[in-house]
Length: 225
Image (tube, rainbow, N blue to C red; front, side, top):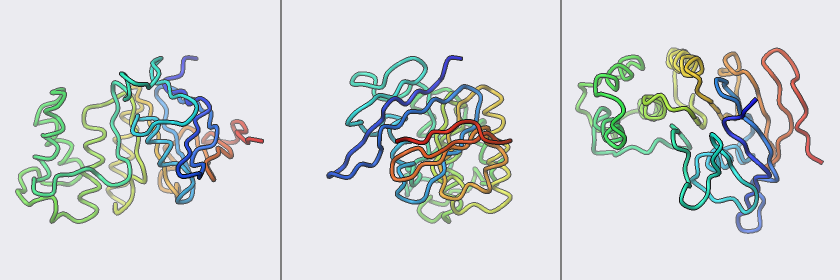
């Protein structure tokens, strides 16, 4: 089967510390993957590598058959929420999302408003984002990542500051994205809330992949010597 994302011997060293240690993984279309690890395990760095935000010291990332390299540093169709949502504090929620949508002009304002309504955000609220709660900012970051229906979705700790109802709404949207054929990778230090929707779970520790399981049992060992 052709893989949508391939991580080959990915190694990242910062100031003498190995953050990613020869990681090899493959991700298929139309699946949701859970990347589990404690804080500092390397999961955020791996997501950054997959979406082209960092350069590897060794190895390569291939997305949809194309290697991420100079001249093609980012995947062609990716939505990402990594660490904190990148929001403009003096803009409203709707205006923040509209600024992003204007870059590619793939979706209408009505689509944006529908996503905001789905996540219980008032699109007509003129309040500046800097006055939003953490949960509201997190919802905006999630919407920004998924609203254009990208082929690749990367989410880092997406349930941070979300209430249970919002987690359910997030899960529903991710399942829809999976059904459209998107490849979804969710990183979390506590994956219990997302475990029910993942097709495969991968654990990372000290920059190395320890193991991975399918939803209904052990798939294969990723233990590195």
